[in-house]
Length: 341
Ligand code: DP6
Image (spheres, rainbow, N blue to C red):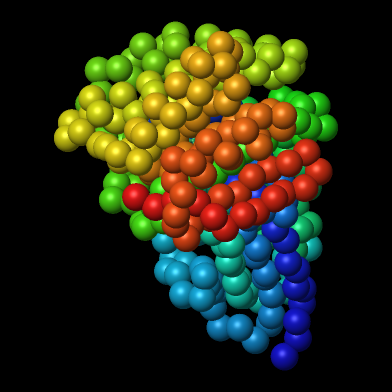
């Protein structure tokens, strides 16, 4: 038995401030709109993937959090093929790969597990096979939002215009060092698997929500420009305002889908009110919520507001056994106090 190569990498989750929702090509995973996110630090919410290439393995295989996945699924196959097509190593050595991937947070609970998962898979495969150049477009074939986890800091996914998707790639807007005070707190409201997957939900919305047309044609393009500018000038007031508006619009799109999709629950709405009141009483935007396809809240806020905001959260949710994660400039703090529904 010859181990031809083995490698382990990690990739963090990203939290979208301008949401990707809807595809113009389901197979190539080409979006209907550009999107933008902040990438968490490597040390916190992340996927770790190990891959071994061996000439005696009889098949490619993948285990996710200890459970064997069906690697014949189209997204895995598209990713493997795209990597092997661009390989500079291992091409002349018959082999199969065994892949082991673990998340250090709940999978499929709206915590962007597919983003870090496919990003990590593609990045690790790319190292193993010696793939050079941009691989965000390969991560995109696994899960759209995964392409944005390829970079740290603030990252946009350019929707692109080409039919083959070659210009639908992730681009770093600003590195993490540009705005080191920025923190993200994830308030875990519910870590159960969501009822409607992002993939199915966005397909239904694209087909039926009357809000989609304007969102893709005018609202998002304008917001992309404005938020990039706000990030550049570190203007939290504008950044927070756009982030909350886009989250609200995204959930409105879901609610106007037929049949309607509701990802938020009462606790999520309670957190929205808490943030809104906190900002109103403060007279400026001190923190900004955003919710993906699930009830968990992600709160963007500058370092100087973290202690005050967490004190507020603990006052309103004094008991519970969930975990809050938050992102510091050079470190992550984790604390295991929080709240439950
Ligand atoms: C609400 O990237 O999970 O988190 O491309 O079908 O795999 P697929 O969808 P996915 O959708 C993420 C949607 C979102 C918004 C975002 O991250 O931009």
